[in-house]
Amino acid sequence: MKILFVGDVVGSVGIKAIETYLPEIKKRVKPQLTIVNGENAAGGKGIKEPDYQKITRAGADIVSGGNHSWDKREVLDFIDDPKKNILRPYNFSGDHVPGRGYIEINVNGKKVDVINMQGTALMQPLDNPFIAADKLIDKLDKDAIKFVDFHAETTSEKIAFANYMVGRVSAVVGTHTHVQTNDAQVINKQTALLTDVGMTGSYDGILGDKKEPIINRFLTQRPNKFDVDEDGRMQINFCVVEINDKTNYARSIKNYVITPNNQNFLN
Image (cartoon, rainbow, N blue to C red; front, side, top):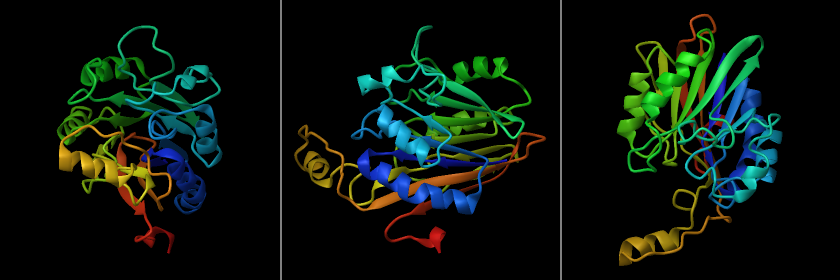
């Protein structure tokens, strides 16, 4: 099975990049499943139903989330809709958290569990993702492919989580930091890892936001309001994971970018 995963969609430029590039990427990759992290789609923080609809119409089968999942109150109007394949981190505390932390989907007769987890290092004090994953995986079908979007700040936590999950999940792909890493690998010929897949949004900003307020913050050490760069040129960051349907082990993982200065994938 081939799974396409696209990094954090940021603002209207990110939506435009998804609409522009994702259909062509899918034509070339021919994935059986496409996952897009959309937690920054609505003005850089959160997601609204129109954003979800645009992302799925462009070709996403599942839209995953992260620490900004609740930043738009409108998400509560549709996150519990069983017809919508939208995720929020599984390890939010409590028994009555809206939405789902994983989705089981049937892909050409093969079960795939797509899991959203959030790290805790330098982030919100959610339930321990390592322990939460242990308990969840024990409940899931052993014959299913398991793909994890691990939304976390530190590279060490992402790499530690992937190594802890070796042989139990097919892939761990990191999101949140918006900069694609160059460490794609298959650990022990079993579990694919990419510490961060990167972002989809403005190529001309800083992590999708306008540059000036962020630079001023570093210059003055004073708080500044950060605004999403809605006028920049587009970029899209993604990876492709190939998985053996019989063993559920990853065969390969490759990371890609399309930017104004790097159109190699499209040539």
